[in-house]
Image 1 (cartoon, protein in one colour):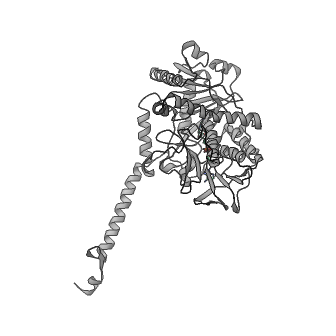
Image 2 (cartoon, rainbow, N blue to C red):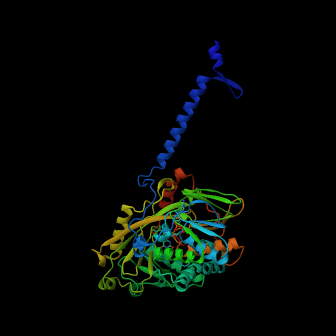
Image 3 (spheres, rainbow, N blue to C red):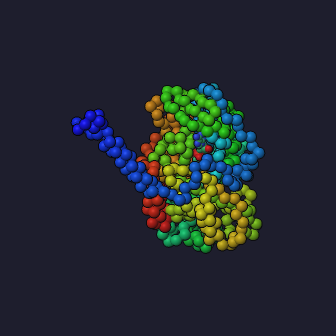
Length: 492
Ligand SMILES: Cc1cc2nc3c(=O)[nH]c(=O)nc-3n(C[C@H](O)[C@H](O)[C@H](O)COP(=O)(O)OP(=O)(O)OC[C@H]3O[C@@H](n4cnc5c(N)ncnc54)[C@H](O)[C@@H]3O)c2cc1C
């Protein structure tokens, strides 16, 4: 062996290899790693994935009805500041936290940071169903029994009470109507399922009425519905008006609301450092109201999955069109399919209908604000449910991002080494009323109080692992396939 070859030898563990072999090994290793990740990413390939643009308001009827275009959007946070409590997210979780915290701590400096404007996320885009109860309740009943289940149900009624309070005591105009809810079965399997759900509600001592034939027709006339269940709890609202109105209430009470303030990074500690696009703020207490946007900021990664839902709004119906569908009690209606539709009337006589599919986009991408194939599904579904309305114009179509988990159960609690990061997350598509409750729970936790709410089963609920991000599209599709094998959704 000559001198050059000798000098090319490098130490490697117990033996010696030449530099050429070493470089070759690295190259082969890198190529292998690239090949493997490329192969894995093919599994994650999603042709429906939208480009990575920040979402924008797209044709949202609620924003239009709330006259968002002419409302003042607050100035962003600039420079370096200090606060006692910083809240990230101006949806129902963040706003309700602010509403309750400012009442408990009138002297503390509370600053809410919102990337766009309050109500910009799911809170201003949803179907506006204010559900009583909470996802995961029926699973909890199976484990804990009916008495504990009823207590939990009563606890979740807080959200509806808070909306009522915002309307009656603070004058928040949000077209809130408490007409209860109707669930509708489209086939015999779903009707059987409805009966089971009815029994489950009865076991909690809740009111619920099964409807068939003429009794069902007296509520709504659709050739698609074979049975129904009327539930007197819950209501409908214009969610954007509720969010914007709550923003005004918390500001009046002394909360500093910063809009157009995208948080770029959070460095947790005894005092948190929250960096925004144009400034930074330091505070010992942090509240996360980010729901489906949480993974994008590094929270609940591989646990909370952003799923999207889309909604359309028709033109206003004429009196005779309303009469033809017989929906005079104006309650929100959801059907019993796994990929169900939810529909409700608006204050100016339109129908808003959402659902039909709930896409997950690869790598936790956010909704771009619209999705043509789902909008088409919804439009067809509307006219299949109500053929009487054939020819009705669709005036608006939009969508948004929600936080889902594999066990369909929300989590509200506290995390971090110093137990000073409070959060409410993963309402699994039912956060209009429950987001209010979550904010209340967060305020009680910060105040060190205990109540029926801080004993709810969602408190610090451990969210199950949802698999690695680049393979999640596979697990999301497998889950959808698994759940849609049956025509009916499971009791939640
Ligand atoms: C189309 C649709 C229909 C739905 N229908 C219903 C329904 O009928 N009934 C029901 O109960 N639930 C429904 N939901 C779910 C419900 O809207 C949500 O559960 C609820 O609004 C979540 O509230 P939130 O405040 O936790 O999150 P969001 O309302 O999503 O608020 C999070 C906020 O954080 C902001 N943000 C994100 N990242 C950053 C950042 N880096 N810096 C600063 N700010 C940031 C966002 O702009 C957003 O405003 C629906 C959701 C959608 C999308």
